[in-house]
Length: 455
Image (cartoon, rainbow, N blue to C red; front, side, top):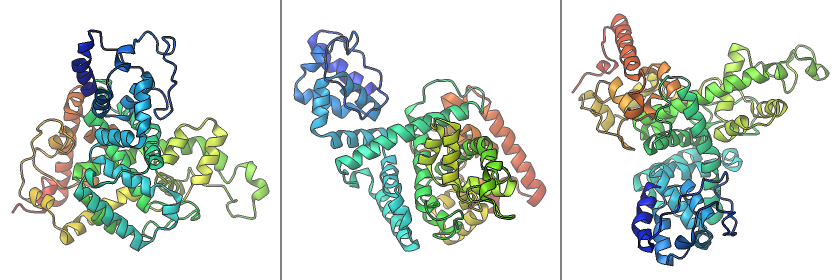
């Protein structure tokens, strides 16, 4: 939006009047705004000047808009811009998604493909391998290689982004802020922070779409039925930088935490001992529709299963209007999965196997102890907390190599400016020392990377 404001200030000054203030973003950014231009509809903002701008300048202004929210504000504030937007709605929505998300658009595009019951119901091992290969090729070719989808598809993608994913981004930020004092400042997320969280959310959903339990498949799901953990890491997670895998693991921790709370709320409603199941009870067997959600073994398996249902189910649970409907939702989505699929995919054993079979440039950078200094915030470089933890030397280790206590506050999501308001560096240093001491006591190493000697 800052880019748009600068453009307007430069262009609009020729009309000799003050730049009008933007309207608040409406709840539904894809809804059509009213075409009533009276002051009562637009507050005290005078849009007469901006309404008279030539078509070409309005086009340049639209091109400068770099988020769906800002596009929504503009077309809701100006009937003329709304009319121009409607001339090619798909183009402008797709353009804004590209501007807002950068390379994450490739993940967004694929999530839309895999986010359907039809896709999951027809998955096979061979199809999944082909889908991952297509995804790898798209990542290699970049966002410009993506064809603009049809208007219906773009609207669906934009709606999912604004209604579900950005909502969950804010929920995630609130959750982490409650887990580490000081994360609340600054109040607004930076664009870099937003994109890291969005990237983690979309890739979490991509994993669930490719490998999670499909609806209609019964109450038990074999997580290795399509691809086992080792193959999932080699094919999908090995595409990402290690701190990007940690972004996914941070989102995974958030989703698990939310479902722990939901299970506590509905545990008795779905407990086999609840008298409401008496009419369905047949001998010692668990009645249909009842689940041991509080049982440490069964409860964990059920939570693993509902987590891999993905973001739409979590969004529905967070916005459920009543307790009875929450009970119905959980009961309808419960499926038993033995392990936490995302965490299991990143186990050290699988990382070791991947390294033995697919030694990469990242492994070489780690073995050579290449410098990894923090050079400011960017979308693709390692975040501040990652650099601090690994002592400014490259690491391709993640998962169990990272203290799990880091993930509830989303350590890899935040800019340095936010973390300096917290005890993050002290926490990181303390955990590093504790990890190194454990390693030294157990296997005589002082750094987990020492298991692989430098070249």
